[in-house]
Length: 131
Image (tube, rainbow, N blue to C red):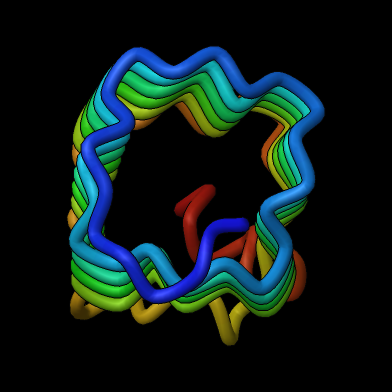
């Protein structure tokens, strides 16, 4: 069980793992494969998720505040209600991801160079699309 432990899980292969509610903030998960994993309502605050594969992952209600997600693949990830304040998404792939306005604190989110094609960012998609 994953509960209240900063962990060294870099490179772990945990496709379809159920880590819902886990409290593993500040953990090292760099280059892990969490494809289709359930991380709903987990605390990953400050975690190192650089270049991690989170394709199709359920991150609904998850705290990713100040997490390092640079270069991560979040294609098709469900992120409704996730806390992304201060998260670094530089170069992350958000194509087809499901996000909401509550998840995005645009003034605190580092999203430069992130791929956002077909990301469903309701109700703020027009804000990100520009004129």
